[in-house]
Image (cartoon, rainbow, N blue to C red; front, side):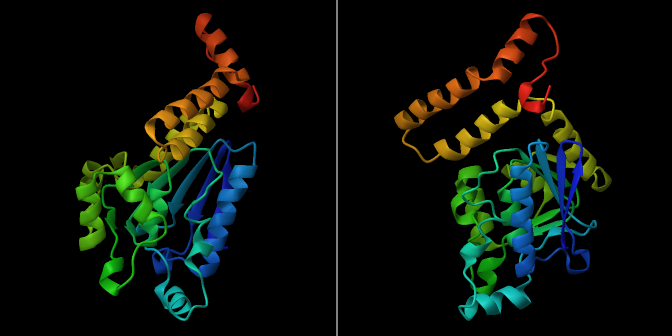
Length: 258
């Protein structure tokens, strides 16, 4: 398998494992990545997903063009087949943390955009070079990027296709944290450990609502937000958390099996 799936306690560690090719994705690997996300979604013992690439040279440089471009150009493949790997229409409402340990180019950049928290190596580089070969980043990026960062920065990345370093990516708002290369995975796993102590129900409601409210008119979004909020307030986790707060105790959330 070129996509590995390992459980470390309540964390599912998903690794794009083709370092000799800078973790370029074959068509089969897109399917495997989608299956890994679905496995994490269906496993009640998984609280958080950490996604990374094998080796220190690349997180992922996108699709293996020698395979994917001919298939697309000849009409033998529909790009929507990759929706699961890009987490379009996702039902995975557990937090997904991206540990970016090198190049995040093209489709690798797009997969990064599908995640919730991002820690990058100081040596990481990011780019969307698609326009240089006459294609576009249609793995969620045309829809997501201007929703995640400022318009001017998004268009700079989309139109010019130039690489930016980790510090620039941080300033643009693409990543949450920049660390030394040997600290990337550890930092991501620390975040995962922390998230596993929080209410699984509350995290689910936060992610589900953020993904679904963004395109609604404001008044409709406020109404839907109240409904989501009520789901959280009425939950067993909320009762446990509020009781623990009142008693100055650490909460034990039923959603975590406590």
